[in-house]
Image (tube, rainbow, N blue to C red; front, side):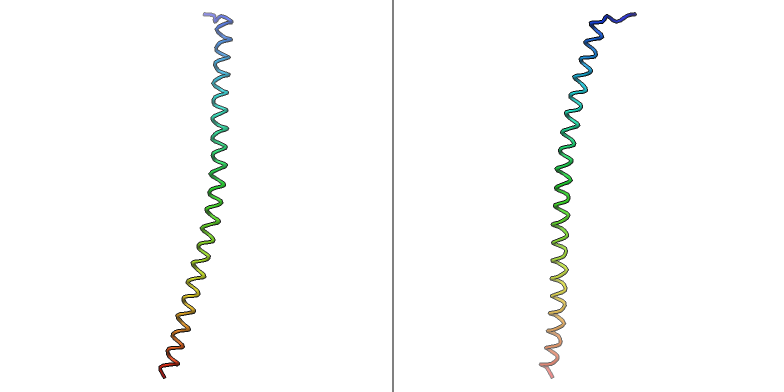
Length: 77
């Protein structure tokens, strides 16, 4: 069985169009992953900043509590 040249040409053109569609979809996916990576980096920065603030507040509260305990001991003598 032989395939006519015109049919072979049409198959190659269809394949080329399919490859073009796949390439454009892959480009879109890569662009989306770049956006996602930027969002993740931004979230990481914000979370680390919030964590640092929480630790500073906890340290301040502990120091304030200890200081008020010492002051209460001094005043109640």
